[in-house]
Length: 192
Image (cartoon, rainbow, N blue to C red; front, side, top):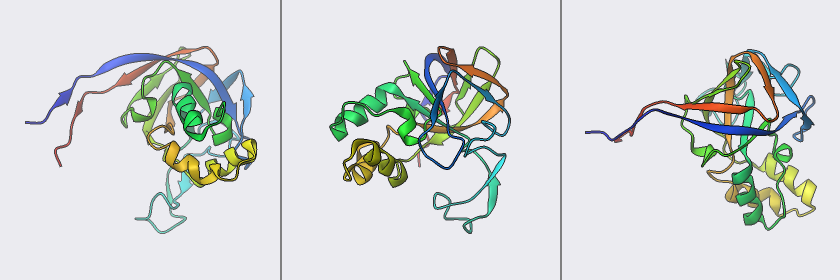
């Protein structure tokens, strides 16, 4: 018989919000984000569909697919762990393309797919899954720290701590300081 983990709801606080309106990885801090079904309007990852890339080798590159990567969601606690592994004082969420930085969610990067993040305005984000660390983010860190080795070191240091990607399930505004309710569904551990 499979082991089941019961459903539960936890909370996390929005500590910072960022928006990147060009192809630059580093986002600009903002006090609020208005989310639409396409994500953050004008943001580099907005849209209902996106072209497949290297993360989807089962499709020919450029195949139109559902955009489950509208938002990048990070944990300040996990970023502090990655910073320590890289031997830097701080790793800012916007250096690696983060849109929402939370505090208070234990092991945020390990929240399961289908988790729902609900905000006071009624906005809701559906989690697709973890955001595997990549050299693009590492390159951005290297540019901020002045240490070229961070481009590759980040990939190892951020494994299972890189945050999540998700898409807008319900439109609305998210504000810095919001306390979000995080709905984790009942899970059955897949026996393989």
